[in-house]
Image (cartoon, rainbow, N blue to C red; front, side, top):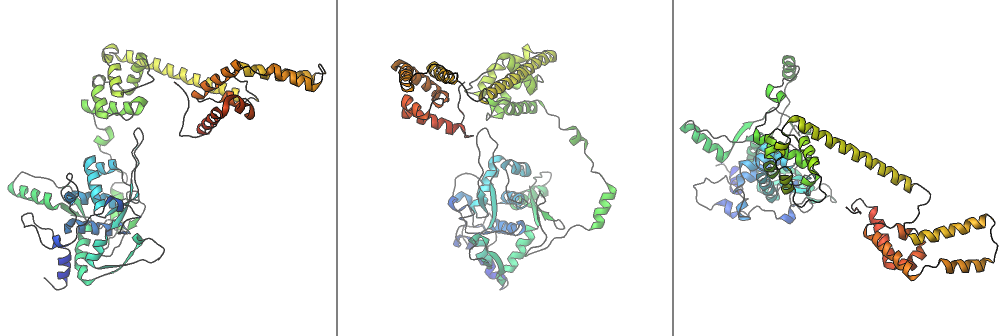
Length: 500
């Protein structure tokens, strides 16, 4: 070993074989672990990677150093930072911004949802990822993906002798930029650059011969890599690209090859399998119908798709569509309150395939359901028109009989004065009318009871139909304050008042 490579070998040891004894330089170095409180960009001790290529160098360094051991911090999940974690990191390196959904990574890697979550957590614990915005999962709504920042751990800079500088004193620490590297770390950086320029693929196990078995075992332990030189590194959304780095360069294909490829095939060919679509088997049709039902029916939102597929297996096997199910549910009757959606669906679909056993019967049920939908739509339009005509007028009569009597008496007095009616002493007339219009205790109790019932339904018509001082004197401070709260809440999109 040369004198230049010796310090790097001490700081960054090669992965220990499975049969070697425990111990060595790796055990001397501190363990690489970032607690959950420091997995955010604002609290991270690392620096942001400027592009995915240099970040993959740090990922391969963590994978080969052995400083991060997942099982030291949990009793379940993967045992080591291996090939699968690097494959997940490769997908993240191509995203800009780094905002992957779990479903996207499941499709790209072929892993399960739980495995993807495990490996994302390992990348965060190793200091390679930091939250910018944490995603949310609300039942009944679409999940929001988390946005990450690709980070280079501080241990990576210290191990390779990388010098960084903060160009702006007011900027946060994670914006440090690389200015140089020690001579002892250049050789290891070159090795990491060669690893970052290759793509780790899923290993394939072959059992046709003894040599293939040995190759499959070696691929499972070390991973199968293929070169990707001569390829422009850019994000799937074509937002940005990186054509150079500190350890290597890439170049685009020559224009002659592009021209020849266009001349040979001016339009892309579509395979027959993709053009015709994949034909679903019986289980696939069950899951497809279950997924459509959970999207169409509000009372099935959030239910388990496999459970709904099992409940609707009889109608799915009979060739029913989601429209056929909607027509049958209309014949059975709608429900307003659902405690368990899958159980209710099992009751409603019992014997459905024997009653509507022909396409003509199912089409007739669909016509009835669509007619009812159209009638309900017209009824809603009429209600909206009536409500708008009611509230667009200059004045709306109160719903209480006692208040209506008072208002009618006041209008009668105004009309009589405008038409030149009796001319008496105004003071005496006002006193007499005030005594005549003064409600009794029984009428006041009825007013308060009516107003309390309206408040329970979320209505404030009776209280708001009177003068504020009169409302406060008749209904009291508590009911007036409750009416103010209901009116302020009705203007918010997060609250809904009404009754079933």
